[in-house]
Amino acid sequence: MASKRKEELRVDHKVIGDMIEPGSMVLDMGCGDGDLLEYLVLRKEVKGSGVEISEEAIYKCVEKGLSVSHGDIDSGLKEYPDKLFDYVIFNQTMQQVHRPAEAIMEALRIGKKVIIGFPNFCYITARLQILFSGHVPITPSLPYFWYDTPNLHFLSIKDFRIFCAERGITIEKSVFLAESGTVRFMPNLFALNAIFQISKK
Amino acid sequence: MPDKSGKKDLGFVETKYYNMPEGAEFILENDAKLPGLKIAYETYGELNSRKNNAVLICHALSGDAHVAGFHSGDKKPGWWNDMIGPGKAFDTDKYFVICSNVIGGCKGSSGPNSINPSTGKPYGLAFPIVSIKDMVHAQKKLLDFLGIKKLLSVCGGSMGGMQALQWAVTYPKMVVSCIPIAANYKHSAQQIAFDEVGRQAIMADPAWNGGNYYEKGHPSAGLAVARMIGHITYMSNKSMEKKFGRALKRAELGYEFSTEFEVEGYLRYRGDNFVKRFDANSYLYITKAMDYFDLQHGKKLQDTFRGVSARFLIIAFSSDWLYPPFQSKEIVRALKMNGIDVTYCEISSDYGHDAFLLEYAEESRLIKHFLEKTHKKQGK
Image 1 (tube, rainbow over the protein chains, first blue to last red):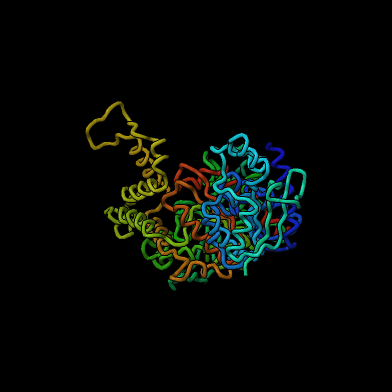
Image 2 (cartoon, rainbow over the protein chains, first blue to last red):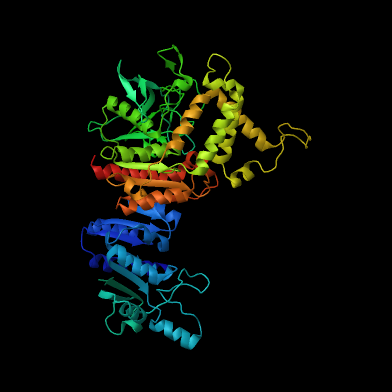
């Protein structure tokens, strides 16, 4: 499962890379070992920086030549001035922050555009697992037991669209991913992961 | 001679001295004038032809210019030998590393134990009060003499970190990168308080004699107590528990006022050792310089860093209660608000403030790559 997940995240990286204008200022919230940032610096020549909670991950980022700040996402967002970044990215990290609504609004304050990638909780297999096996779903994009998941919040593509609509957030781009590639037909049912680019006037 | 990490040491090194030209005065932040300035310094590695590989290391309260390698006849290397040498974080095969003793110090640079030309005797308290900015200005004089116009990096721990920050603010065009470790942007009430207790311990020693003791006996008892207090603040509750606990120096309690606990013995040993190598007046001057340190000067902290162009690597340690991580984080926040490139890491350690001298493996991982990236960025 782990190797598959990694493979899939690489597709995530490519999708996010395709959304980003070359040479822009990018902040990756929860940048982990810095693989995405490194990819964006090398391929898109972005001026990138990251925020990451794991000390070991900080060393790995610095080894890659990246600028990173050791801390949590919730408080980390407050440290930047308005619209400093062209893009603020939450790739697979939004569901792990304590206050996602606040974090998204803060990200829209400090970034002109925000890119959010998250696992879709209403993927067909997840629905079937709840309905027929009576288990909390475990899918390739949500590969955890209830007791060891880093995810604090669970949402679907539909939930995210509603969230944006209610807050006057514009969805500029969206890409939906399944194991086989991108999904266009009924993504809330057939996509494992969603990547949105949003902005707010 | 390979060290603990298997990397090579520098071998034998020597302290050199720079003297300001005859007749030149060194003007201090408080407008006092020092007739002549002497700076003790060491350098390792080679300055490249483009003169863009110079790294300045700034020492802490009790440090000196001898940061790495061995002095002839010494068994112990310089105070940060684990960090500086061929293949180490400050790789002397790549960088030209400079470290000098601060003004006000007692390890070869002008300080209260230097000879006052107007009396022919040590200055004592006639030596002008110095500040962190004065330390930086003195280092600038040395760099001018060495023909260095750009610093690839300026780095230091504790008071060394304060100098590094001052460098980035005072000479923004000269500093390409800045690495303050376990430092603060202004001395807090608690930091001033500990310094003042140390000073009072020295000044309460009758031997101190208003700072005029060089021809008689030094105030060793007072300075030793100052150092003991210092050591308590440099360790953490956890590191003290681990190192000493309630262990006794002898089989059982003696019910008397002698050195019974291991921790007492350790502090006395550190205190007694310190007086052999440090001047009490220097301790007063340098702690005062730290207490005066305030980059903010009543402004918003983020305005302090306006116009600063260096990239930063800021390091703090989880158990450091003397210079706690939240103070480093305030600097990080202020830098970010200016859009300045900053990397921050809080290294988890039980060693307290001393961690900056001990956690060299983690520091190396950060500094080595940060410097390489900085060097590459500015073009070799």
